[in-house]
Image 1 (cartoon, one colour):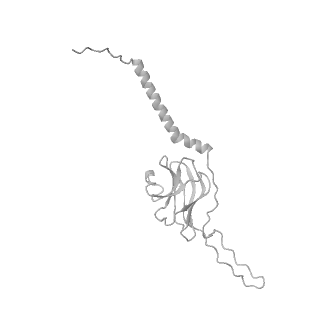
Image 2 (cartoon, helix red, strand yellow):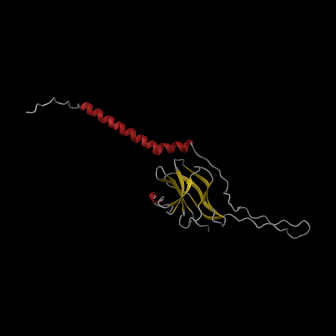
Amino acid sequence: MAVPGPALPTPSSGFVRRHRLALAAAALAGLAAAAWLAFGWFGVQGLWLDDEVDEAAPVFSSGATTEPPAPPSPDPAGDAPTTTAPPAPTIVNLGTGRFISRSHTTEGVATVLGDGSPQRFLRLTEFATDNGPDVDVYLSTAAPDADEQTLDDDVVVLGDLRGNVGDQNYEIPAGVDLGRYRTVVLWCVRFSVAFGTAPLDPPT
């Protein structure tokens, strides 16, 4: 015949209540920390930590310029113009569009510049968005107003966003089909959200 052991003490209602309050407080602290990481960080960055850049127009290997060629100078000994070297290639607009805000306020113009060679640059001008962690510049096959979770499905990565304010350039890899990758996306890798998007519409 088994001898019953000593009875185990049962928690008092006060102990249970204190334990539940402690668990609830810990859960609230965790939620507050998560909210700070997701939202408070962005607020502090936007107010105090703007990364401003001011890059000049991109330099092409061909020496292409946006300036019109200078007219030939007259020959000092006569009225025939002197022989001049062929003008450098001219930079042309291959596609442009204004940014629209997605998860964060974003403004400015995205333009693809080319010189007739395979070399092309994406240039952002009059640009401003919120600062944030791990934001990349993508070219995407999705439309600028597409569902956010489709914006990074098929992309070309141009690199880290150099600054959240100011003019800046990104070289586009040779062979990228701009008829297919027709949308600029500012993508926050850490939180999987788009700050802003811009179409690359052909010039009219």
